[in-house]
Length: 412
Image (cartoon, rainbow, N blue to C red; front, side, top):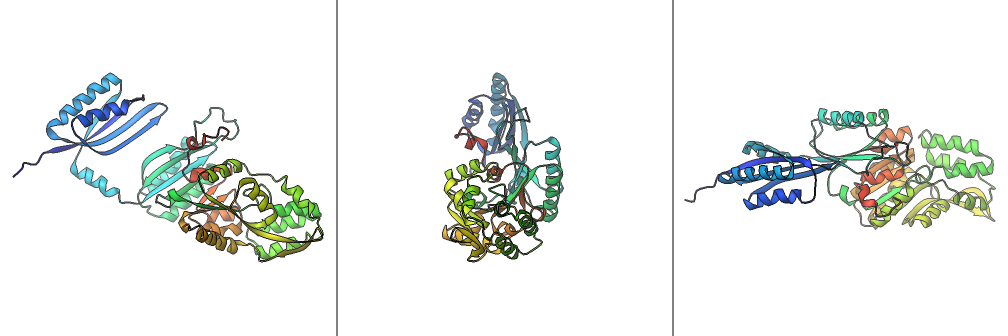
């Protein structure tokens, strides 16, 4: 009978100043003794390397492997430490790999130790373990007054929360108290293959409600604004409020719409967001309770694929105070998201919805990733993800994009 070769499991941890070829030097020694690498991970923080390798080696060669690694570490001026791993410890680690994995993204103008400490404490309370942390934003400038400063890290988390609802509620509370945003997503194939993104328009892609702009030109700004705010807070039915507001626009000249469109206040980050989404092949839709005239203006500007909004009736160059067709309300937005997904042959789990008002909640709820953007309190309270601290290009970090992916276009 062939004698079974005894093996050992050894974890090595290497730290020191990083330089080209360091990892190659270490793995070349492991290759020389025909070891099997069972796990490997490497991180570089401010040019300081942290490398971990778990390998299996024949028992009679383990000492030689460690001896050569120590000599190599000395010549490279790095620290090498060894830890024996038992079979039981290894099997327990393997069993953990079947547990749920999540991606927790933290986002803000800056991230402090207090914020990260509070979030990671919640994870620990829920019995979840952090496998890896990586930074998605570029190097943080020391001058915090610089424009468009933002910070984002992504935590790979393993385990099943003891109480998911409690964890979500605590994260939402922290988000408000500590001025940061977060996204907690199941780390599955759909998260890495989002393909369709649907936006609300007013107060999302643009920093205004167009109907309010039209109302001011018609001299009924105060009345319309009050109705708009009540509708966005979910205090009155959207369709009813829409009908009341449009009626107040009767007699307004059509030319006013062109003037408003050409001066729309575009939300911070829209240019960057649209450029990246188009470059990486996303289908983009506007699903708006606003008006098609302005949606098409944005469509032409950014190459948006679909626009569904409300059509104002115009006769002899004047608004009649009526609209054509059915109102695009919350229910209709959700229906349209499903419809476009079917047309594009995209699973609903691969869709994203972004909005700010109560009428956006249905589409935020059915999308694979629903994001409340600078939203009303009712929307934030019911959304699983929200962005309140930076511009709308923060959506890119929730999709896993790193700034390094985007720097090919200099001004990004």
